[in-house]
Image 1: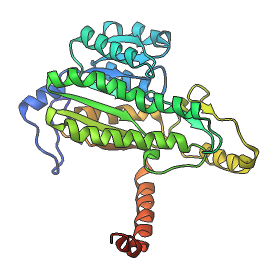
Image 2: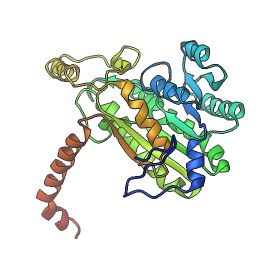
Image 3: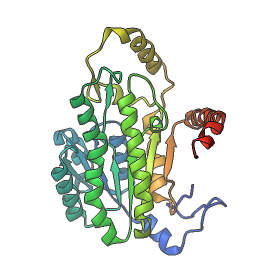
Length: 299
């Protein structure tokens, strides 16, 4: 990963060398728009940007939860109330941020929550609200930001997904499904807007010691007794994960937004890659075992 701040720029051999114009652009203060900044990753990443001199439009459902940011960083932070399930509110917030700062360089869709419940237990209204927050909400922000970034000729859209955008854990299958949808949308978006000079990165954290497991970030479906044993087993496994330090993630996000060629996907955490290799190896083994049937089905 190149380092673009400071006196020198260090570039790995497998990456393109930055032009002087790119170096200059990378070193200029950026304007960020971040959803879900009241706590967790959103707050950490907002502060990482502000601490190095960037400007941030920080949003949350309860704008008063951002009062300490205003007090600490003054006019370099703009705090905005935003419920991402309200598309008109998302558009107004993005436009307000652009009007206030005069640019929009980085947009991070971070707001979201998890629904705990089996596929049978969760009600349609619970599933619908999950998707309105985790999928349709980020889309509203993206659609508001794209015309601004297109006029600028640059921009970087980041979305907080999860390593669960590639596999599932029972009891949170609907949350996992929202991240699978999130991943597909962002991958398609990246291909569609690449000619516009706009970058897309999907952030895929593993287990971290954030407030994501708090009552504010979890909703629970009405439990059915036939799943009590499975529920206890899975919840026990979730509490025993080796959780990363969320404060260590800020530098990774800064590195990605400063990179001339940012990745489409970025894992956060130590154990994701090994686990993902096994996940996809298992899938390939099954596909290969059934390849004769697949070929016969071609006709």
